[in-house]
Image 1 (tube, one colour):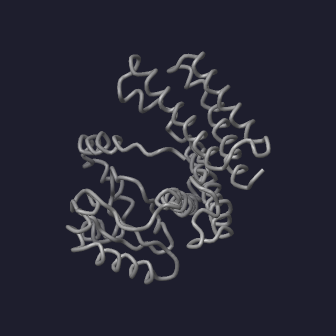
Image 2 (cartoon, rainbow, N blue to C red):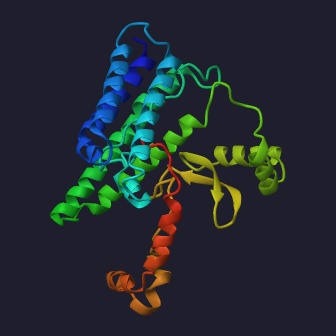
Image 3 (spheres, rainbow, N blue to C red):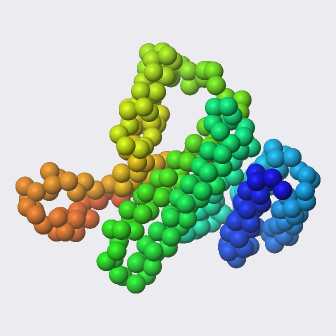
Length: 302
């Protein structure tokens, strides 16, 4: 069995584990017969992976993705008539359970990006480094959940840092694998090219800017092209390390500024009092509006 096929099989095992852990909720929204049929097909696919040379690497990835998307479609379509949009979102299996993140399979072989990115680098980068972020994020989430349950927040600073570091690593790497392709290169076209020209002047200027940002990140980090919903334009950012105590690929809904300039003139050094009183001025309708808009973004869950 090739290493790539083995990674797909491992992903299948994680999907089935999450499926089994969520089965009671799933059966509340989708017919038992359809769920059992899907699981049988998915198990059969996993077993095919164990047969030497039964599937080519790309075929294995395509089959796995197709089956995974069939489950998502099944959950969405079958619950259409029984639940409102909010209820479907709440019960959808797309929600990653606390401590239940998984390593997404590479959408191509380990050597597919050669000669530009070496096979060994891809194996280590994906299988070892990215897996460590998934493991670290799951552990941090479970420890934070434990802190909430026990009302013991003595180590919350540590575990929030761990969640930020590993969560940012997991989310950014998940994006990273999918924005590369063996058939990549060249220039974008259509709306993206028009927006690059509008935001940066030309594709060449964009490419130069992005390359210099990547080359000049202090220590280790990322260069990132982002869409700014507020500025309504593309922007290029750097990220030292990759988290700065936050996570990428998210839309902020509720924020609180605890820099001293936000409270010191009134509360002096009593930040706790400022935070406690701040809850009295939270504009929940606005938070709700942001949530309604943000949840329209639906990325594949890993």
